Length: 302
Image (cartoon, rainbow, N blue to C red; front, side):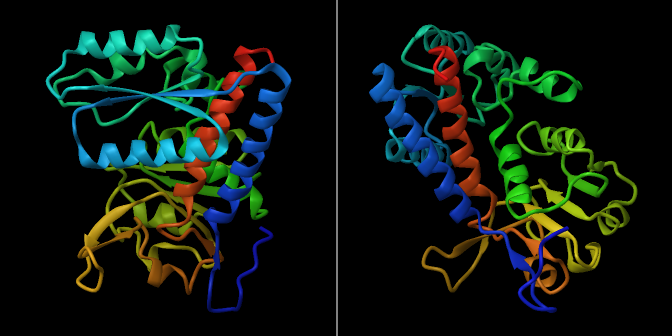
């Protein structure tokens, strides 16, 4: 691995904000060129069901990011008590809309809905989240290329590559197997010839598997679950957790922490992503990049 810590006692901080800004600047430049060349602009459709505050905040954040790079946002909002069929019909309309090149169905959906059924309605050519079975399956099969890779997974890999982390032949431990981060990240690391252990709720020896890994990716949603003694000295840690915990010193009484105990890890590992400011900003920039790629493909613009 090429990463070197600032000193013997402090890990290098993998700054997601600077990487995200670089990606967004490149996306914005390409969108200007596309508009000048063929008079077209990428469009991203958002489907929001219900009034969950966290979902509204996530969608708003993505819309603001789109605005900054020149992607047009189109939002469809449905009530909490709408039917599955209504959601599927809304997705189908976005599939058929030539001005929309990517579709985001904001999760979670109401509990009574079949999430997989709805996600499968999204056209594979507009699946910028990368969750369609055809995209996920292509990621898993050697020799095939998915149209889109899930944004958080692309963000994890981008952080590793930008900071010169060697992947070929290294041991990686991925904690969690969600379709958003854990599963696709384990598949992508294997594509880069890492030896990957996937840790989940039924794993018998999570501490040992983590302690043996050169690269640790966490996707469990449990604050500070991975302690310093779980980590190999000199490991690289990618923490995708974003957990709210009580903090009386904060203005709103809460703060965000990751799945890894940062204060214990920082004196032991070679590099680590902060929370916030690590994987999150890069994930949003990858959504913008995927949307641009979709528009270029659909317009046959190279």
